[in-house]
Length: 85
Image (cartoon, rainbow, N blue to C red):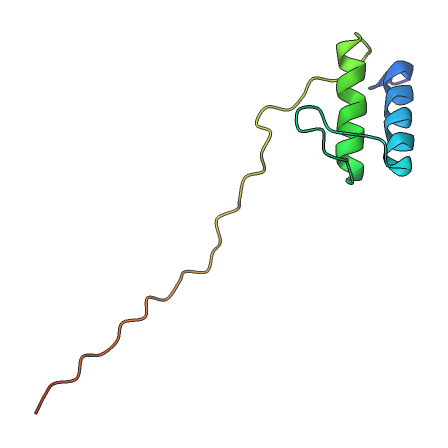
């Protein structure tokens, strides 16, 4: 049998954060702006659980998403010079 990845405390914190988001009372930490994103609400719940010592996996390193290098190369548009007569 596999062990649980997240503890009960973590799931209750996420549940509370989701309810607050639905009611429109969940606010982000520093800016205090209203949270609209479901993913952000989950992240806030897990962060609170982590602070209280609940069983939550570590955060992934590198908080921003990396862009994939596009395979299409941009065409450089060079204007042809017309000779003066």
